[in-house]
Length: 220
Image 1 (cartoon, rainbow, N blue to C red):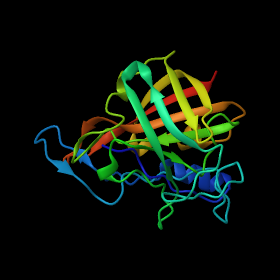
Image 2: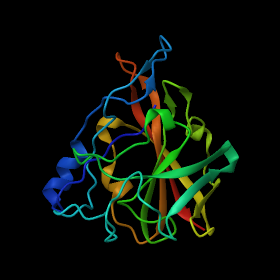
Image 3: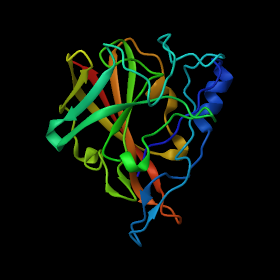
């Protein structure tokens, strides 16, 4: 199971409001609890990023969104760990798809999480977003046990210079994909925030999960 793609609207109140209601509920690399079969389709969910400018500038920070295959800068994150639930993963870079939805890691890289380059760099002011699959057709994925994390747990993000940024989980939230809290996840903030996103919850008739799990954390 994977988290959702997020579209990026123009920076107007009306479009932000419409973004909150935008839904594309098809799931990517998700399993059916009834049959055990693995389903896969091109997109997971499409909730627009409320901080994108009209020219597609990176969210809030002036960074240009660039996806897989781009070289990391010294400050870019390369590894995430949540020791209390046994998560340890390198990080790929996630940018935008051609349809302006946020990339997710490909199903065959299910054990690797990804950092959305259009958001903040972890440790800098703003909302940094890391996305990972819960399950794919290949089996359990990197964020399969993320649902076990509790408030107060530590998250460590290491950058390409070897510096660790420590975060503490403040809360978790399970939301219907049709009501994804876009502004809360991607909106501007003065704190050094981190969000981890994956799929969660029951399955629909096509074997796709109907919910998302969001883990909120702040830098220590």
